[in-house]
Image (tube, rainbow, N blue to C red; front, top):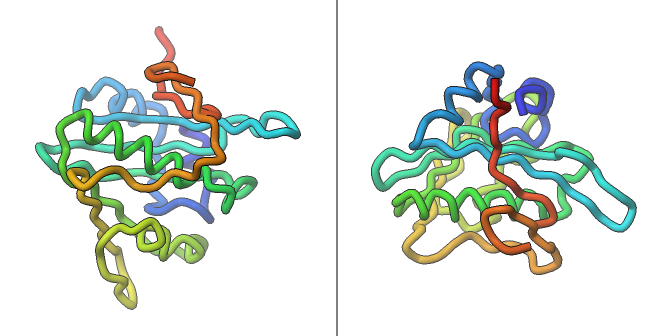
Length: 167
């Protein structure tokens, strides 16, 4: 996951870079969830293609990091990831999910991502944008052509919570 945060630019909503120490502190924090996503299709495995970090503060969950490999952009995996992040946030007691978009020189193609999913916010001319989703109204839509295999639930093509290595 650390390598993904360091190398992913095009589909990286906040362009935050997290080293292994930061990811381990996130993993140890009971108010934070880290997930990674793998993808397998009829041609084989694409490996780990995305990750996300969501931080919950009371009834508000904020997506700190959401990124996806450029190899799979536009196939719906990004929607699956946001759906799982929303589900985890709701399980942790959040009623609102906040997604941030922080523009960079290389991530303009995702400037309208949260808007396309149905998040509420406003696109400013420049600077960071905040988008919200009312978790009490349900979860963001997930494409129905994905088979989602998740160890915490029944068979998500490859969406799992990050488990840090034991030292």
